[in-house]
Image (cartoon, one colour):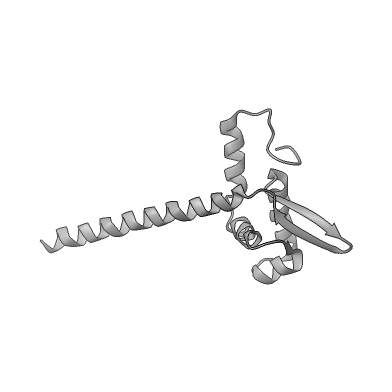
Amino acid sequence: MSPGGLGMDVPLYQAKSELFRALGHPVRIRVLELLDDGPQTVRQLLDALAVEASGLSRHLTVLRGTGLVIARRDGNTVEYTLAAGEVTGLLATARQILTHLSLGQRQLLAELRTERAS
């Protein structure tokens, strides 16, 4: 991965894989959710997450490396923000998919219970 985002010299499927790999940790997803509410300082992120500063730093490095988040320094304070509004859409789509899958599982369980009762 190139330092400002996903490399353009790789096939699209590989770039997608790298993007999803970057999203593949619960802390990173939670950071994106928090940033979806607006810019956050490192202190604010640490207060909202159950991680140590070094762990958060590693996760933010991955998110910055993919270009999903942007860091802005103001003196000793670093503030993070989402790089693009599409990240919000991606999080919403993930929620819709999970809702759909959950409904499908509930329907299957109901059918299994009905079948067993027969």
